Length: 194
Figure 1: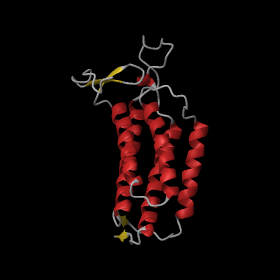
Figure 2 (figure 1 turned 45 degrees about the horizontal axis):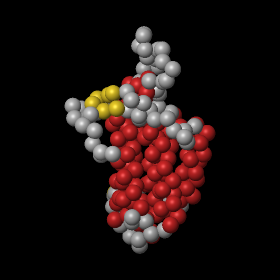
Figure 3 (figure 1 turned 180 degrees about the vertical axis):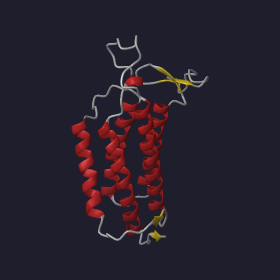
Figure 4 (figure 1 turned 90 degrees about the horizontal axis):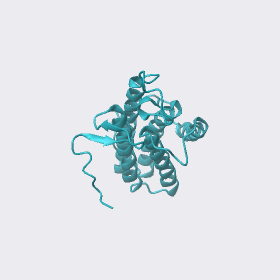
């Protein structure tokens, strides 16, 4: 099997359902940013010393792989239902709430240890992914144009972004902020406070 297909040489690509779209479309930007976040998380794991942190990040990577697939219109053996995403959201929220021992408000500059700095990069990519997903949501009409309503398979262009996925990505950025602070503690490095 070849790595390249040459079918994208003119700025077009296929979504998971076979639909051809321009590479600059918002949906492609959204799942591409989710893919970028997943790669950054892989880098972050190489700097995490605790197995528990690596296990949580691996589970997050699995969830993001499914989120990206959903955005690309893929059919999944493990679809993200609102209920399953809510369970993941609750898990991330619990981690964030448990970690918020410092209730004072102050701005923290990204940095400190290398691990924390990479966690902050992950956090900002996560925020960008959320914005990209919201643009897909904003630009997706509530129904297809006349003549395109018929189809036994849902055209991904008209699929709305799952609200639970948006909420998950939002909670994930909070988790990554807390993780960055924890990684500074793990590395005996102080947060850089503005």
